[in-house]
Length: 188
Image (cartoon, rainbow, N blue to C red):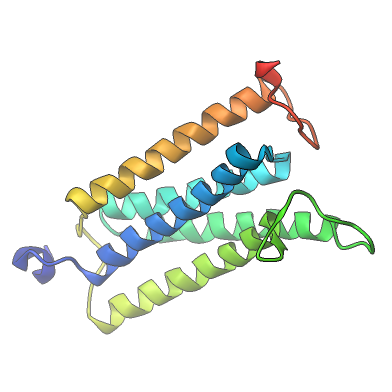
């Protein structure tokens, strides 16, 4: 057990994993608010990006609940790379002259562009986490994050995952989603 855990203090890795999961929850919340408030249904590539962010969040969650492990950080990094490639694919689809892009913009950029930026940001964030853990001498292991703050962040993330799953089923049914969805298939 780490000395920080013995003294009752949170480790740097534990705090940064908690903040990482909170950041992923914020990304999913913004996308979901745009979906519900503005009626912007996510396209199939958008849904894949959301799944990628959920996988990233699961890596942070595993670090918090099961203890920090290299395999959990690898999961975050792989999910970030896959999400980034999916986002890059969607960005490349809308590079043509006069192409307005898909959906509305946030601060001048479409969500798929933000997803690419966020995916690269997560890779940099994990690198920072690993460097900071090394600087303070922390090792991977049984640094678990429990308490009211971590339970609240976990609950928010779990709720967002469930809401996204339900929303996707309502939008697509049991089949392939429409390329440019305009209504929920199961709510005709």
